[in-house]
Length: 143
Image 1 (cartoon, rainbow, N blue to C red):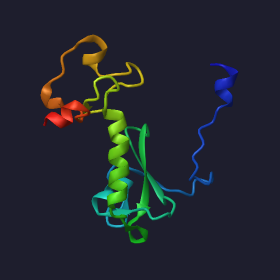
Image 2 (tube, rainbow, N blue to C red; image 1 turned 45 degrees about the vertical axis):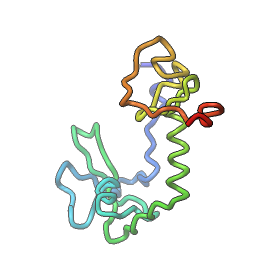
Image 3 (tube, rainbow, N blue to C red; image 1 turned 180 degrees about the horizontal axis):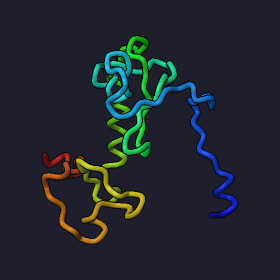
C-alpha cells in the first residue's frame, strides 16, 4: 500500500463525524417514517432541502443510501413545458449523429466515435431505432 493511499480518507459530507447518524441494515429502517430518495420519488415527494437523518446499508456495507424523513418531504416540482423542451434539446444533442443527422432513440457514442455506428464503420442501423433527419432545402419543396 502506498503512503498516498494511507493518507486518503473517505469523507461523508452529511455525517458529523461523531457517529450520530444511525445506520440501519437492509429492511430494518422504519418504512412509515423514513425513505430513500427513490422511495420518496415513487410517493411523489422530494427531500425538500433537509439533510438525511440516517443511512441504510446492504451487502455488508458495500451499498448504502441516505434516509430522509417522510414528514419533512415536499411535493415534487411538476414538469413545465420549458423544462421539457430543455430536456428534449439536451437529449437531442446526445442522440443525433453529426454526420447523417439521424436522431436515434438511444444515446450514441459521440465522445468516442463522433457519430453513429453506421457512419463510423458501416454497421447497418435498424430503421426502427431512429427518426429520419429533418428535410432541408429542395427536399422540403418537393414534399
